[in-house]
Length: 534
Ligand code: G4P
Image (tube, rainbow, N blue to C red):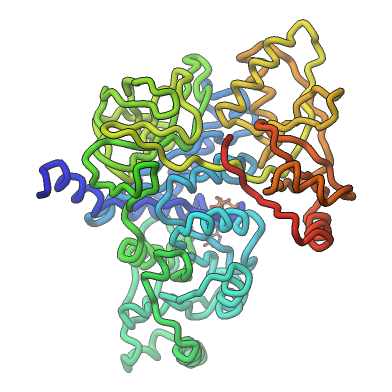
């Protein structure tokens, strides 16, 4: 028998879609986000997100570092409605603020949108983020951007995705011309050509003319060569012959591909509508109590990100929770799986860019921000009803390493406390030399900003001025077989052996090439790019 709450949850889940955008800096993530919000009516004029970004630089109570660098250390959740759907866009920190949080955000997402610059194809940050999506079998939707500029051949781009990522592709729409001659796209779903009008920077929704492929008037709209080119391309696509297989899409094995230009709004609406048809709704998740369907009537969720000092005046910390099952209600009391304590969830927040709005309730697929008086750590489960714990969020392979030095011995205690708390919170990973004489911890980060955050917080929260001393390594791998497996292979060249916060062996390599070398020389040595917490 379905209870009232289950019906309510089912309805909420059916119209929720949640996704994160994975891309390399400059591919157009901010622009696409802005256009999606524009279609969702969350903003009325494109430019608002960027303006907000610029405005932020001028706001006085931002964390000093944010002001200095004009960047956001905050991952935010953008929520907007489109047709009957409530869409949650989990903003993955990118650019200079790329950090482990970027990866962790993907643990809270049900779908990913892979944004590619048509001229550049796959780029390093996109590949790294793709690996995390693959680990989680997330459905990936590809948007090839900047078609209004000269770019690479669409077929070549599909081939690159197939060959390099091992993802089958299915082009849902197909571009007609590129650069100055980009005329629009052919939508294979409706079998119609969508012709677009250029508008200055696409500040409003694009107006479009839709015309059937066989329509005799087509020649009035399309130059003949582009029309023939399109027919030829479509024949090739038919010959390649892959069908859109939603099961494969949902398993993260096939990616529907869309072409467009976020800046001029070409193809954004078609993308959004197809995405909503194909994307996964919030689904069941593995937990210690088995796979739990989101309609499971008791509330549960996990923490995927902690945010400190967004506003130094209040010294607050926010824990971001992905709601997995049941209904969240303000002021509810929940169990905290790791500590066995109960916690009252007061002052929940919904985050739209930097404006925090208080929320009363939330459903599976939503993200809420909770004030965190130091009780939460990354990966923690909170729940009601029977005891359960979600799979933790792993540590991701760091790429930057530096000794953290405390030049002032009288601050030893504060230094230790700061390091311990910041690593527990997940602000950075910490490793140690295997040489007992070297006591300085090694900071291990995914992005440079993490070092700066640690030094800033050590000074402001713990009163310790620190120094960093960079190490010239750029790749880390955990040794699956532990110390024993490492001993068996004997001496390794061009690598440094360290131990992580749990005493496990980690190998640091100067570069990917050195890693390959070690792999070739020692095929039995099993190395992993992520490791479970603890
Ligand atoms: P990001 O968040 O992924 O880093 O990228 P962002 O949206 O900031 O876009 C990076 C640059 O690419 C911006 O140019 C933006 O206008 C441009 N861009 C984004 N989408 C398209 C597109 O579809 N076509 C073209 N031609 N350009 C696009 P900018 O010069 O850095 O900034 P702005 O002066 O345009 O604001």
